Length: 355
Ligand code: KG4
Ligand code: ZN
Image (cartoon, rainbow, N blue to C red; front, side, top):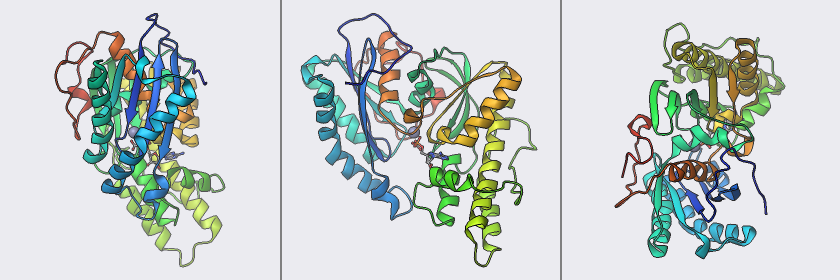
């Protein structure tokens, strides 16, 4: 059995929480108790959707429905925890793909109903925001969070659990989406963010100068669709791109996205006066982003926190962690917990303040 170190070593023996995540193309389950994360499993559907160049919602829902129960059974087997040990269940309630969300939500809700234990509906982005607390570092608000995933790119002021102020977001493509689209143009399989980043390692960033959209404008708003178009034209200008050409272009693209994210994040820190930046979501696994934010953090005396790599992309450990924080802060939902496919972080309230 794997035990994960956790910041929240709160004494409350006897509470064991099962968390489920199926908001997009990862089927995931995690178990959490007073010692922290007991174990977690993720089954990625990446290969399933690769041929389509993006997630096909109906296929995602079907695979979640097929895979979630066996995944929970395996988690029980590997951790030695049983259905009878559970004292709470949590599932991602939004935002995400409607059919996909309903799988974990329905299964989690049914389990909780059958066992007569509380069921918590968790906001996927709130879980990403607090995933930095799944490592060995202590994470206490207030701080600024840079959420960079395939579906979202947002800078958020985190004043407390459930208390958020949106500072700025992308006006078009999310950073991860831009990475994935550029990767497809380079012939890399979907989702190609990590593959593009590996290709970029052998490239020279200075050969191509791609635009840094909206850097010349104040504030935390971002945009990545123009960068993708500039990338397309630079690629098209090469009749037969060689491997070094492709690496140079990948490197230039990555450098442009990272520079925008770093600049906008530090402007948000200046604007709010916070001294801690938490970076989360799938793109927070990007090496260049981690390196440049860390270097800038050292220079500016800002603490930059990243989730451990295994918790950057979608997982249920982060759902369990935030559900645990909310449960311990007294959250006991009454009545039905709705699924919300569109759900702004700012509409959340601190634990106990919502039903
Ligand atoms: O958070 P996540 O797993 O799913 C969403 O909620 O969207 O993020 C997935 C995104 C994809 O766009 C993927 O290409 C990107 O994160 N990604 C990366 C890297 N690893 C994952 N992008 C750039 N560099 C990486 N190393
Ligand atoms: Zn996510």
